[in-house]
Image 1 (cartoon, rainbow over the protein chains, first blue to last red):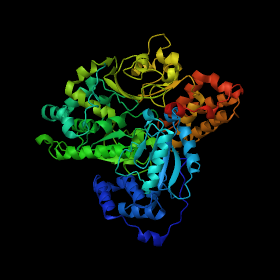
Image 2 (tube, each protein chain N blue to C red; image 1 turned 60 degrees about the vertical axis):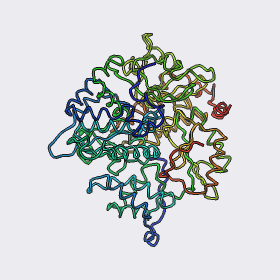
Image 3 (cartoon, rainbow over the protein chains, first blue to last red; image 1 turned 180 degrees about the horizontal axis):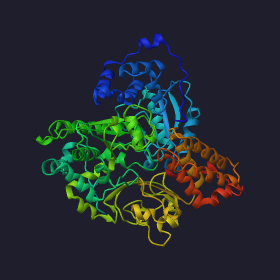
Image 4 (tube, each protein chain N blue to C red; image 1 turned 135 degrees about the vertical axis):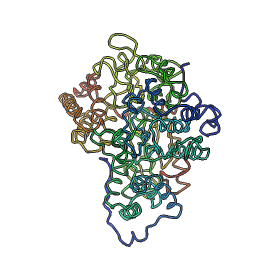
Length: 193
Length: 445
């Protein structure tokens, strides 16, 4: 993906030694692996990377990728080449809440640019930046399949649709109050703020 | 009211649960197929139905199934393409979110026809919450014996799993999807071999869109011939249309193929006309990849006949005056819309989503985005229109997968039908004032 920021992080052996999935995460990973023939468990890579990203701070460090490689019995480069290809994997630290505003046609037609400008002003950051308190990262995204409920933004697993400035105010406030990492694997599906 | 076969029960409370779905006739196709039909008979019904792939290409589904290689001792797979990412398209999301069992029922019945013991539903990663809904429904189906060993006491056993993607439009291309399902980058494969011969892990595989698989349910229930009576000519059955943009009632509509485009846009049963009393300027009828058409050509063909919502009628006149039904991603734009700016959002999209394998697509999409950016910041000149045309013509047909065409066609169509808008900007007669584009306040009001 052309706009993906590639990792510039260095590999840290001491950090790597400390990385391990929690029991719940490991169970989830084992369930995912069981979906594939035993000799084809590399197939589990994409879903397992989602679990890893949620588990280890919202991004994939070189140490995390190395750890995932060891679980799936593949080479670290096989993990990196995948993690660097898909837009949902972060190769550098992000804010706790990554706000992804869809900007493709239908969303643009319905005012996505205004939503981006509004958030930029409100959080005092530009697209691609993170607030100083580490709470929010603002990104733009390409079509998220919410064209009939545009404009929209995604934060973790939640779709916020038919956005207005007021809705943006509310959701930012709620996220700030909750003050936790929002990941794609969050179980509370759809936030209808 | 037109006939509905897929989302007729979408407003029934609790229809996402197995209990309610079953109470409304759910899983009847599995009973009928497994107990009274041979697998090939199911395929024959799908052939008779005239069902065409609902993901965008419109290839006859029964024919695709009949290509599946069946060597002894080699597993076969059914893979559902739920990587819905074509801008303007959100029908599969709606179907999976509201009636997940319709997809699962289709997966079981289709897998029986294909002899697939295992199937995968590949859902785009951004639809994580939808994947959870489908997984929950799968768990219900296992608990009730619709999935697992010896379904309904027959010899047929089947396992169905969900896999989430990582965010990449290209994985909607079937061979890229298979690569991704194998845990790799989504780089499309060179064909042949086709997935029907060497697909998932090198095994014979059928890849079908969500809506295609869900349509197998009514086809088996009512019979292929009855299904084929709905629609016009080779456009049989019903189709889910995702309607968005400047219309009064955006949303997912199930239409009988063959209604007029005019009816779809203006009738209260569907889009309900253009918002704020504005006039329609242009329509992208089948997702971002298909040619944009100005109002006069989307409502009527070049011959002056009413344009119908069918594969053939929308394509009437070729690309000179026609377009495609595609994925059914229907985007309407009002008279205030800048076609150049809309094209920019499409081209930025394709540049972002190019997998990078083929130079014409990887480089060409970036060049086109840069040139369109010049139009937006007022530094373009007239020769840039020709340059854009030249670049798009050098992408089409020169790439491994159709993303090249998908990126080139919107550029070609915008220039073909709206060249004056590009020239007006280049001649500095009229700048696209991006900042005036304040739609949101109208939404709030």
